[in-house]
Each structure stands twice: as structure tokens, then as C-alpha cells.
Length: 378
Image 1 (tube, rainbow, N blue to C red):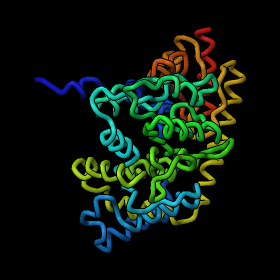
Image 2: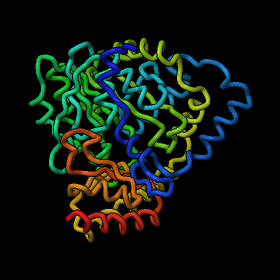
Image 3: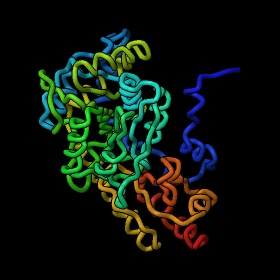
Image 4: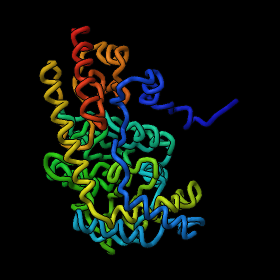
């Protein structure tokens, strides 16, 4: 059998390999999804739409107009950005949003700068689009460094990806750094793909988007920034598979061409649910964020007692401590799933990624086991 060169360049995520190797009773600190239920009003909206027969057919390729209006209102409310609902595409999760952004802008041999360590899809999706991912190391505090991005630009560079709050690091970019991302995109005429799926889970500082500071087109959209977001992490709706991408009209029209033929439209029930989540009460989301903050503090205190150094994550629900050789294997052998840092890029070597999207009791049990694992290798 023969297969395309593009698909042969990618493999199944190392994260999944770790999961599959673990026992059924393991404490899973590798799973990247909130351990909270989706908002009740979002679930009910989907049920009502199904019962009324409103979710049986295709929606517009871009998604329900009412959903896109809710997404536009969300960005005006949260970032003060005027988004035209016609410049929004509802996608099958943030993953498809990233995919259509890459496919619409990357040609064979084009370079895409990605954070290292960074979310595993950035590398794979750049390759599938025919491009060449170029890893850009992070600062010691695991934040994305605008100067490092600018230094990595070549004549072949067409885009760079930023992610705040970040996966796998939990790092939150400062306003000054985000302004620099926008400047770099505009001055070098590059596309900045801003992955903002953890936007609501910020503990320290505030979330900022490059779209707030980028140069505008005549219709007011950011010229060189596309924004990816999703109900998955904002509202604990990972299984609903509803994300979105927005940007300048010309960019959206090209991304829509990919989306139309690959997906047709996002799931109709999920669109109704996400519209309700966006327009409904935010108290459950604030409570979820506060719970993650408490768990983060518990984890950092536990690391300090063990002697493990960990940059303080300002958001998301991940930590990426520096760990000695053999630590990850010792954890896995003892029934605690953590992901080796190199699964997220070569610069992640010497780290491990942990998700604290699990109960306090399980975190405390995991910390006790990790202390034993640490003692076994130092």
C-alpha cells in the first residue's frame, strides 16, 4: 500500500500512547478536558431543538446565524472587538478551526512557526497542509517570546501560532507580549493564528488577544490575525465538538472553502447548545475557574514539598514541571498518568505535563505517589 507523504509525516499523538499504556485504575493527570458537566441550560437547548425538529437538517455552512451573532457578541463583550457574524465559521471543535486556518493559508514548503513545547496539533496540521513547522523555544517561564518568533522568521515563513493560556504549559501571555504578536504579524505581513480556547480559565493577569491590537481592514476586521476558540474548554463541552474561527472577510472566505467540503456544517444540536452557553449565565464558568485555581495552588504546594521546580501556570488547567530523567516512567509504573514533555516538542524534554482537571482527593493521592517516584530517581 502507498500513502501520501503528508500523512506519513505525522503519527498518533504521544499523549494517546501514554493513555493506552496505563491501567484502568490509574490516576489520570494526562487528560486535557475539564471534569465538570456542560452547563444545564446548554444541554436543554440542544434537547429542545432536537424535540422541535430544528436540529435534523444541515445549517448554513458557517453555522446558524443566531449562533454566529452570539459569538460576535461574546467577542465584543470580552475583548471590545466588533466582529461581523458573517466573518465567523462554526467548526467541529477548535481542532477543525485550526485545520481550516492552516489549509487556507499554507502551501507546500511554507514555514509555520509554532511554540515549543506546544499543542501537538500545531506541528501535525502544518505538515498535513504541506508546510514545514518550525519550533520556537519558549522562555524559561514557559511563556511565548515575541523576540524569538521574530528572530525565526525567514523568507519562507507565512504564519505563526500563539496560544494563551497555553497547552501544555498553562502560561498566560502579558498584554505587552500580545501587542508584539500583533505588531509582528502586521510588520512582516504574516498570519498570526491565535488559539484562545482556554480564554476563560485565567488565574493571574488577564486574557488578551492579538486581534485587539492588529491593523484593521476597511471593514474593521484584523487584517493578519485569525482567532480560534471553542466551547470545549470555555464551557466544559469537549464532546459536543463545537468551535469557531473568525478573521478578515477574505480569510474567512478561503477557510470556508475547506470547511464546506470537509465538514459541510458543524453539528446542529451542538450549535444550539453553544448558543445557549454563550448567552446564558456565566456563574458556573466562574466557579469552574476558581476550582481550577485552588487545584493549581494545591499542586504547586505539593511540588514545592517534593522538591520539584515548576513555573507557575497563570491559566488553563495544566502544569509543566521540570522533572529528572526516569520520573515519568516511575509515575506510570505507580499508576499516575503524566505526559512526557517531549510529546509536545523537543524543547519540552526534561519536563512533564500534568492536567489538574481532576478531584482534590485524586490530586493529593497523585502527589503522594509522585513524591515516591521522585525519590526513586534522584
